[in-house]
Image (spheres, rainbow, N blue to C red):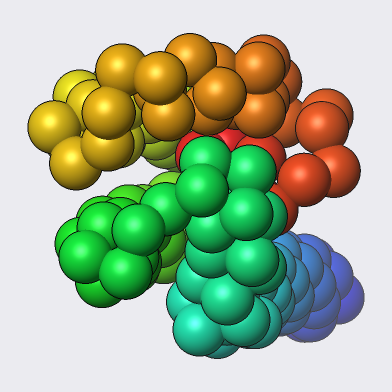
Length: 141
């Protein structure tokens, strides 16, 4: 009788331990998903767009005709980043790859919207890494 009781206690302990591990895994997954969603929701496209345009307009001396087109491009890039941002925590290589493509797309598209002289003025403003604290770095990295 004691052997049956000991075996039952061991089985009950094993079952309880396994469920505790599963609940811990579920809790971790939920917390990660919540943090990722919070990071994406705190990425304010309108605010960053205003900051980028506040930097680009005077530095590049954008004309009234160029401003809406550049603003549209900036918003497009920021929306792409916002859609990719949740993968930054889960798939850093994929995030980096997509953001590299987005940066290249921005440069290609903006060349068509501004003059060569304006592009020369833009080149030194473009951040080299995410360590830069400019609005352009927020947009491009």
